[in-house]
Image (cartoon, rainbow, N blue to C red; front, side, top):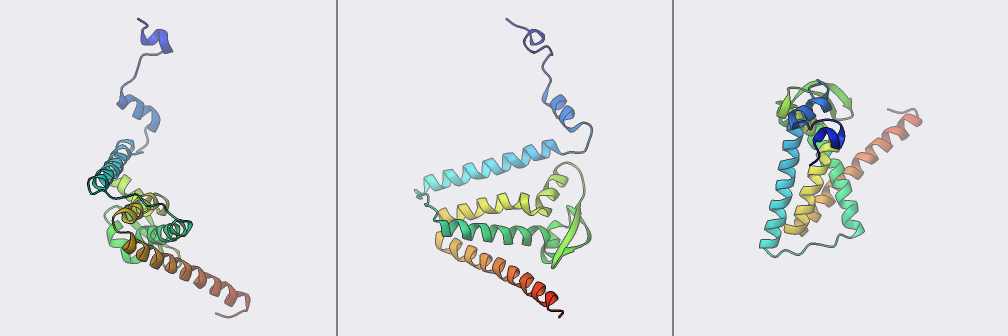
Length: 177
């Protein structure tokens, strides 16, 4: 049998050593990220099991469904991660730093380990978007009409936000305020 030294030139390292080598002494919460991935995968498995147990058919998304999902995910991820109204949800995991744009806050993640990982999830629309899209997909399986109404509403809000920005630009170009 080949020893680890013969096979790869180095003995195998444990997970803790691999994590330390990866993070290089920083406070990167690798274990907490692994935990979040576990929760996400377990949630997907539970949803798939429930869909199977209740004999739900998986929908065939239309291009319209995908467009609504994209618009809704965009708006809801920014609502969760940046809106002043939802700052109480983020407060245990982040510190207020000011505003970062119209009706949006800039926040700094605080804490270590799981607290930091949750803070990074809740303050970043890109990270939050994956979880929101998954929720919308589950909604399309278990409550498609209500989910389409919700995604249409959120997509309309996304369009409204866009029109607000366009109006401000037009007013600025015309010298108005």
